[in-house]
Image 1 (tube, protein in one colour):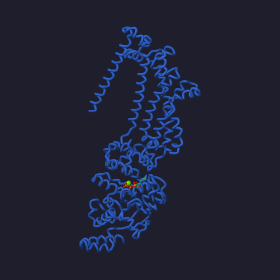
Image 2 (cartoon, protein in one colour; image 1 turned 180 degrees about the vertical axis):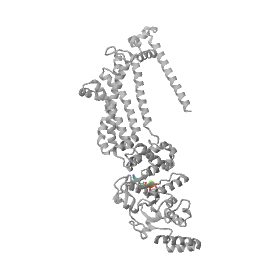
Image 3 (cartoon, chains in turn red, yellow; image 1 turned 90 degrees about the vertical axis):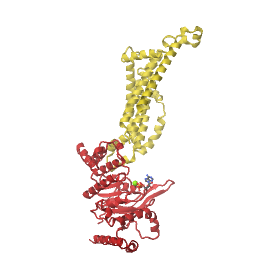
Amino acid sequence: MQDRYISIEGISREYPAPGGGTTKIFDDLWMSMSRGEFVAVIGHSGCGKTTVLNILAGLDAPSSGVVIVDGKAIEGPSLDRAVIFQSHALLPWKTALGNVAYAVSSRWPRWSRAEVNAKAMAAIKLVGLEAAADRSPAQLSGGMKQRVGIARALSIDPKILLMDEPFSALDALTRGTLQDEVRNICIETGQTVFMITHDVDEAIYLADKIVLMTNGPGARIAEIVANPLPMGRTRNDVHRHPAYYPVRNHIIDFLVSRSKSFDSEIAAGKPWDSRNPPLVNPAIPEPATLAQVAVAAGAEQAQATQQVFTQAQRRRTT
Amino acid sequence: MTQSIEVRASLVSALILVTFLLVWHLAVTGGGSGQAMDPEYAKLMGITATQGKSAMPGPLDVGATLWGHIKDPFYVRGTNDVGLGLQLGHSIMRVMAGYLLAMAVAIPVGFLIGMSPLMSRALDPFIQVLKPISPLAWMPLALYTIKDSGTSAIFVIFICSIWPMLINTAFGVANVRKEWINVARTLEVGPLRKAFTVILPAAAPTIVTGMRISIGIAWLVIVAAEMLVGGTGIGYFVWNEWNNLSITNVITAILVIGFVGMLLDQGLARLGRFVTFPE
Ligand SMILES: Nc1ncnc2c1ncn2[C@@H]1O[C@H](COP(=O)(O)OP(=O)(O)OP(=O)(O)O)[C@@H](O)[C@H]1O
Ligand SMILES: [Mg+2]
């Protein structure tokens, strides 16, 4: 399964500390993504998620370590890797359409103006902004700006999408539609996606793997959660799936307590290898935990969990 | 409400103007008629020394002279008697020539300084020393090397208008938001296209502010420069009329200088509004 399309190999990033010396924002991150995989990263604010994304984009360089994409170390930005910026980063002197068209004409410099505009307009339509295409970014709401950013990234048919909290400024309804839209596009075009999010449900709905980062400074990849939900999930039924709550609780537990205490867990002798962060599947509890659940919550839930467990095992063996 | 404050402001402006003209008129007519005064007192006040043509003109005299110049701005009656319009034309041509030359140097060099921290540091000491030099201090050197008074005036305009444009361009270029540059970088935009499609529009408001400061300084300096080099131009006109003791013409020229300066400034203000983008 692992074809290591993107391979993050031992990267760290230091910044000069205010009082002299340096602070390591994150340290010795190892991770790989296969082609067409959707990876979400979750971690507390300031742990270095955007920095990792910038390194993947080629906008920033790691202090140590390398990132290899498709067999080549990243040396700078590339049109193959589209970025949706956390801050939208629209050019304020261009219209919404103009911003997207700028990307399209950069991707295909030989295209005529009409071809460029047609392609840009298609992307604008995709995010439902055709009515606001001729407005300048200052006349758009935060959510609309974010949608222009999404349209700009999708318009250039990238191989890899790097998204920094792409849906954070949207209302629930628009967020839902856009998540569906982006998910469909990614599946159709076999997009490899690296997405930062703070929204656990979003991660569970969209991602194949969810990377959990501990708090900075010195943040690490504590573990990678394999999403047990089936590929054919839809937004309305994810929360009905028996594996949904185990995964969700696992992630939230991590954010609430383990992201802080992870370093002491390791110090206390928990086996953990930074080069090979464990791939966990919370829907398959360790036998001990299963027994505890059975005692604590009664037979019914234990049975449900057991069912998930066997399902997952069946999936694994086939 | 904004409408009403504008209307009220123009009313107050008009009132101030009328009051000023009235006071001016009364002051001149009251003091100018030395005959009505006690001759002893008149002698004491020295009015006899400034009687006749050189007496302080009133607003009506200035108005009449101004009207005369506006009716016939382009006459030539000998080297020292040339229409005000022609003199202004000479000054504007010189300002434009020096200013455009300065622009052609300042904006590219400013780009270079703004883009390259190395060049920024390397050129900084030169700019720091050259910038505070009064443009007129260059005049003798210019006259000596160029040997042509008109061209020397253009050089002086060049040297005085270059600094605000240079410094503002460098500042604007160096402070383009990182995220806009990053957009261009992720789209693999080449350096030239990046300069024209991202850096220039982003820095344009700052650059135009520098251009606006420069044109103001250039217009201030041209009057002084032309007083020095003589021959033609509005500055020479003022000096010449002073030698003729025609205060009416001097005041008229002052008004016209102010008016043209305002037009130049407004033109660049308009350009500034055109390149400013709302954020
Ligand atoms: N240029 C810089 N100089 C010094 N420190 C920096 C710089 N850029 C980022 N940092 C620090 O690096 C850390 C990680 O920043 P980053 O933007 O990657 O966080 P993040 O995980 O994306 O947070 P958020 O969820 O709030 O977006 C922060 O603590 C920040 O203070
Ligand atoms: Mg961030």
